[in-house]
Length: 259
Image (cartoon, rainbow, N blue to C red; front, side, top):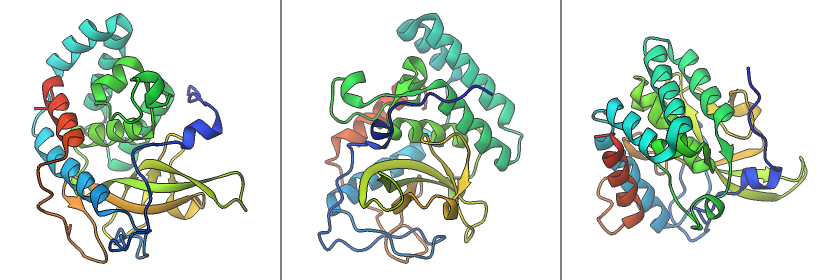
């Protein structure tokens, strides 16, 4: 198995999308963890809710032929070859059990995509790439890894209820360090109340949450919504309409072929 690209430790942890704020917003937790997570601003929670609710619509169908054509026209032969590899991956893993799917998807992106900050790739401080863009340029930050893995697993038939894109605080500087950086991963829950398995671009293997003491979860979400407090169901169901970044991401994904 090819080894994943390993940039510097500092750049691996940096994700600029989220700013942690202790502003009195209700504490968030993912109920399978059965522990309180850190608090975030209402604006951030609202934005995430907009994204995840929109993703449910995006995943209604996937136009593989269109994705392939766009990969060729935008990114040339290398981009087209990687897209074909992705299509082959989805086709091959769809009948597999979830445990094998998550391994295959995690390896696919960790081995092919190099971590590069948004400012260097997109000339923007914060940009959420579509899976086509990540596959085409084979570069991205932690958000791009997570979105691509999440979308790939859903395209291959993994149930929404078992997946959550999870925002965490990642510890850097050793065991005793108190320095953290914002980071994003995908959490897979084998059972509703089970311990999640974490798909991360920082390390090549998938580990249970109990073996990732360097990550402190803040909140988790999927296409069903954002989990707030101790509720069994998503609490945010009407996020509003003034969140251009998330609307833009969904529109670009639909234009790419996730219709």
